[in-house]
Image (tube, rainbow over all chains, first blue to last red; front, side, top):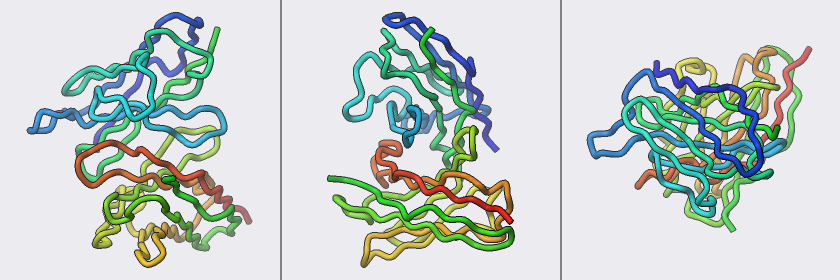
Length: 113
Length: 120
């Protein structure tokens, strides 16, 4: 089975400063069509998860442009250019390529210093 | 508007089964897969499986094979997840989340979650 490994697991950040989360897959998530089947989700406290990024680098509808996704193959990164108070929560990467699809990383908790 | 509304909280005894529903509105059910994801208290997200409401085909995570059944009723735009032989470790919030069949856009709409408590 595919394993998704995130780091760090806890990320204290300063408002207005950038933040970065890494996600590594045990198998390549690059499809032959050229797309990386990795998503990023944010679960704010007390809420259902919400989609931030799909196919590695595409922002979902309504997601602010301070969020960006990058990477290919087995190594992926979610970046927040300037952290805002509403960005606190737990961030998860998830692979959607290898059947049965849907393996999540352990989650990275982002909190304000 | 597009939404997924799940059934209410459940309390079950060990060994029993639970069936959680997820009613879709505001879009065509058969254009999207439906995933089920659960979250144990204080833990991360765990993908359980997926159903194609168009033909009823399913794919389950190996961990749940033999215990989980996902079905759909297209007449009511409702998808169901039934988990049997419940044990205390199944205590969790269960979410449904849609994903467009094609092209791939990730799980863009989630239900509000259903709390299932397994306790004797």
